Length: 567
View 1: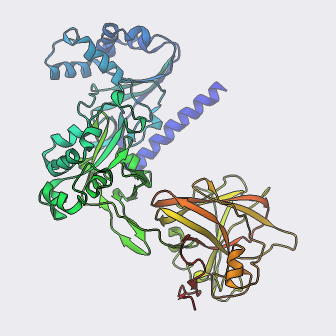
View 2 (view 1 turned 60 degrees about the vertical axis):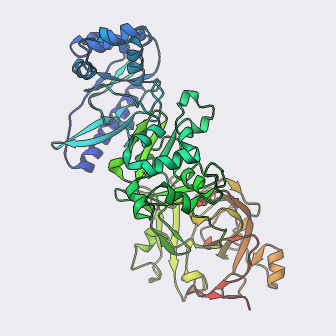
View 3 (view 1 turned 30 degrees about the vertical axis):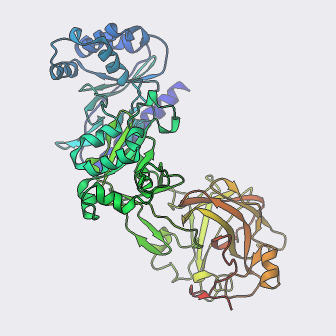
């Protein structure tokens, strides 16, 4: 079993190397990989004095030699003798004996993590565990003379990787890593291009919030924070020549420290929870801010990261671009990033969302199929996930959705835009769940409706399913095999049903799934979970989120999307 495990690990390393070669199209630096479990970290460093005698001496001076001789699971970024020499020269020392012991202790702690991290787990961003010093390290790659190097903290290159010892993993680096010295607040203040934003931080009280060391912060959620700072030039373009202009525009209470003041909320909306480097922002579609119940959305387009670039009610709202060159600045308690355009919190009221589930980016790209051809298209997970906003249960029987369009078929012709997704669901030979990422929904209370075309595989089949939003279960079940009842609009709504399309045939109808309290203005996850039954023809057309006080029945839809108002 151990041999198989090692083979898998080595295979993972080789795959990662091949991916890096393909991504950067350059020569990958040859790193040496060593596997040895017969010694611990201290003993390994001692075996190679020509490389590590200086760092080994530091371990003795700080008392960490015995610590790293004991059993454990650590990752050590070990600087070479040459790296220590450069560090000493920069500090004005001639030997490690001249360095204060406390400074050396911090040096060791900043190079050591209580976790075992192989190089094939390194991403373009922060490592998943804090150093023993209490700050994050970040990793990435850079191209130097056609050679791709793995870089730690933008300060050191890894020159020897994945040395497996008895109590963890050693990565050899060519420079000593330096921890951040300034808080998030101080980093912003120290940069003269943020003078207006710095004054806004101070006037609103957020300077103090961003100037607390993690060890001294009683609020666990705020130990690490991230600022998306706006430079003076960005604010100038937006019409703010100084702080007075910014205050005149946004301060609506006269007190910027007031939690309900618009200037206070403006600054809070630029502060994110946790240490968010660019890679963290790029790989998550929303970030929680210090503005209560408000998020910023993030979108990666090529190599460009955009904040709040959204489509709302069918209208594209351009976002603010993150300045890559001026971002990923580590602080003692977080990160400072910079944006290239001014943005602010938008107060929106709950608004109706009529979501055509068949309108997915990947289907739209099928220009000869999307709302044009009666040819159906189906997807599986063979070769990876085909959709960015649809997921379903993995497995040998993981048959995904089928897209169908026709203005002639009795199945689709009265559906919105004449198309739908057919969802095979139910055990034992079909998937048990699907998940969809919704369009942007403004926070508030909504009634949730599912519009579908009833159909049965056979006279005895059924398909009973439960829906949830962000893990909150909606109370009413939906059976795709059951047609809606017949009755007046009022009678149907009282029973949790309605006619949502032009067609009055009961095979086309919408089922009320329940009421949901959307906590944040964001895109959310809607899950369909099979409860019982199994069949292929679960024909889903539309999901509606309608504010609870709005008309739930009108407007209805014609197949071409035209709204039918209330008579």
